[in-house]
Length: 187
Image 1 (cartoon, rainbow, N blue to C red):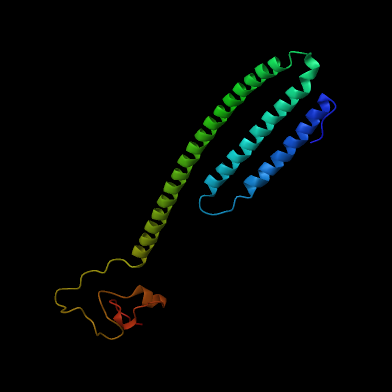
Image 2: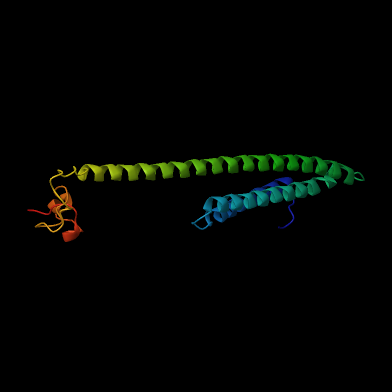
């Protein structure tokens, strides 16, 4: 960066640099590859971008202090710079601590949300499975017990195994058991 002649030029240069860094930061976060753990990778990339911005703002503050220091008076330029720098460091440290706490709170919130969504997905799968079982029960109700006069299992009867009733899959034209089916296959 070329030395600035005025405070306005320095501030314009800082604004341009900040805009460029924000664009670079968005691109850095957007470049996170899809897949397992993407959320954690995005959070890590965002923390990196936040660190870049923090360091840039620290540097901008120091440059502005150096630019303004000679114009504030001769002889005492080091004492005010150290005092201002210390205050800024404290403010920056407080801001960084607040940002870290906010990041931690956001991570905890995202973890809870992920856990809730995972549990919800498991419950949804269970509901779908139960609905599928209920549909199967409706299509193939339980077979009533054969009368006591009938002996044996009834295998070998004409048109299929001939268990305790008609085979609904055979009637629909899609019984996979064929002659081994325990239900009757008659037309």
